Length: 302
Ligand SMILES: C[S@@+](CC[C@H](N)C(=O)[O-])C[C@H]1O[C@@H](n2cnc3c(N)ncnc32)[C@H](O)[C@@H]1O
Image (cartoon, rainbow, N blue to C red; front, side, top):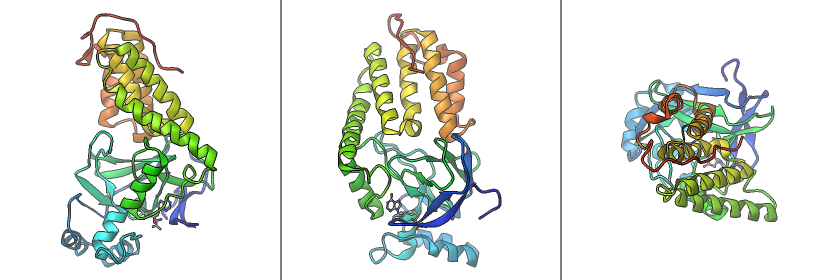
């Protein structure tokens, strides 16, 4: 591992290898900023992978073949390793339907295991052509550092099914190994979050209801321990509802929260952070500002 790194690779029971924090890490801290071995279109074939592998140094090829492969025996090793370890080089969300057009292979980054309550966020920085990993909350030395491979707003059965289908494992993260009653409560919260996520999109003409739903979803995300991993989009919803009724003061409070969440998980210079900063300066610059009759709504809880 390079010097100064705040984690090391260790064997993790039931998960193969994984990354463990070797010192305390603060929320928002950049843990790793890594260039890919290569990137490929998400629809690539085994021969596309081979064409990339021949361009690599022998030591890199060896490291590539030492990565985990959950498709062993079913797919050729090159494509099996890519499907197991590839990380999206772009935004990806099953709920919004966004799919990254490319994925990248990372010698260190591909060793982060998955959690349904991730403490690390991975983000592809297109301008630098590197992936960043940032702590979503304060992490103690000795804790495992985990990203999330799937999306977060699904009840356990669905998360398990998606993880199993795509990556061939039964998730052993802290949320999936909770005692039964705690798991039931967590499942109910995630089902509520999923429902509210759908409902909030229907509130364009009822911004007061929209703000109430944004607050409900944020409360449940917080209780579930996944607010930092996904809060920015709901704070931005709150902003848009307030902007649509010319509620400048509350719009600013919502977009400030969205900006803070974006900076925490993705960094201060992303296109998203720049957009939030623009609206924080002047909410009127949003296209929906003043589209509905003037009304005073409420800001986010502090
Ligand atoms: C991208 S690799 C992660 C690093 C891998 N553990 C290794 O040893 O290199 C993905 C594989 O790690 C394991 N894994 C990741 N997250 C897991 C989890 N939450 N529970 C169980 N296994 C997990 C699964 O075998 C999965 O196919």
